[in-house]
View (cartoon, rainbow, N blue to C red):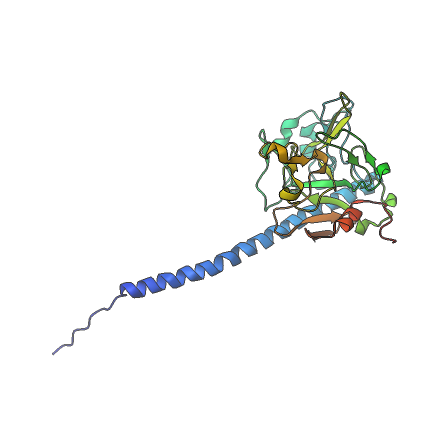
Length: 299
């Protein structure tokens, strides 16, 4: 007599157990995959700053001074060119520079060229920033800490505020390496920005005189607040229309540095090195690193 053998399949309970195990494994693997991707993005962001600084130092070796944080135009209400545009030849973007069409007044003639942006001006952890179809950068230069009244331009206090000039990048700056007496490895050049990236990447600054002397920096910022400053403690930008009017306290030139990476932000030093700074860094030390000749290193 032949023995009949039945083909036994999975029971419903067994199938549910397998599905549960797979779900748990996926739940365990996803954070690890996301962490690995973010680590890769952080490395690329760090490299972006490294490449920018190599271009800045190449500019310095040719011109014998660092590029201006921005140009101040001859005409009021006219956008001046940012440092990002000035170093385009050093990152092999001569064709883009030609499209931008710089003029003798310190500005540029083709704002629509900002529909294109070099990859190294945008952090891979952030979303592409658009303004009227024009791209924005996630990196701004550091203008200074303004610890002394002699190291700032005293301007209006209702929209953009003062400009600190004890750093290495500010409007019409032309800082030589010899002026950085605190040491190039101890002085900020460029940092990440995440909150309210407020103008397309070509623009450096704009000014007018009436009724109050005014200048707003779009490619450089003062160090006046901590990294990733807490909105509950410090408020929001004066130009942040999404914030409650009573909480708009931060002037435009003081919008803080920060990033889309957890816990801090990358900063490039003048010597070309790039460091990830914890957002809990002592604020006095943070401000000291923003100035070029405060003498803090020797104290």
